[in-house]
Length: 100
Image 1 (tube, rainbow, N blue to C red):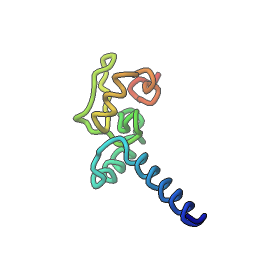
Image 2 (image 1 turned 45 degrees about the vertical axis):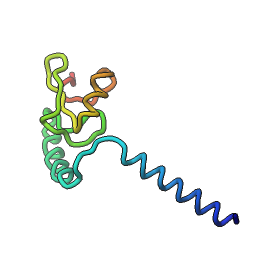
Image 3 (image 1 turned 120 degrees about the horizontal axis):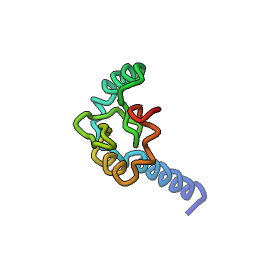
Image 4 (image 1 turned 90 degrees about the vertical axis):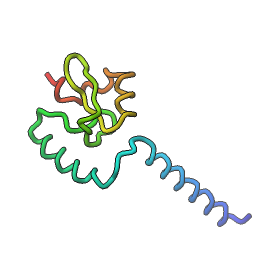
């Protein structure tokens, strides 16, 4: 194999790896994400209501939440909910309902 072929294989492998890493995480439908982001941005301007998932910084789904210290914490997907339940202290600082 020539140097050009090896470089091409390395570049393609790197691109595939990058694509794989960016696709891991929530399985949220992309069609609704842009509409949700607009709503999330408007609500975030108010500063009091949680609109962003503390794990992936994506718009929340009001149907996916846990009760933590007497307050609801919302997530964009079930995977993020599970991550929060394992280490809630890691995400508390990102939540407006726990701001002091």
